[in-house]
Image 1 (tube, one colour):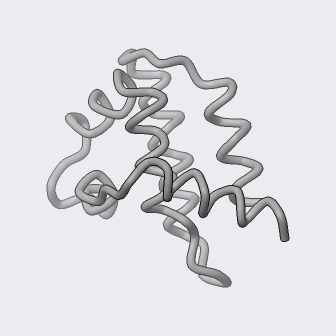
Image 2 (tube, rainbow, N blue to C red):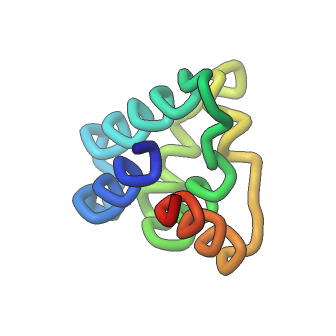
Length: 93
């Protein structure tokens, strides 16, 4: 479900730096961080967003305070191919 929501977000959210788009993206990330039943693929999500929606990613990164719980998400990074591979594994279950 987490991954399906992520793909819906990636397909529909524009790659812009307006405040409405940034807030929608940050609300999604807050929801990911609230998940307690499983460990969400947060690093993979952030890596893919950074590659696919760079304007949105960097605008959101600038808007997050260092004291925010979202700040740590913008500090992680991994290989894009590996991130895509891991995300695909979630959809195959």
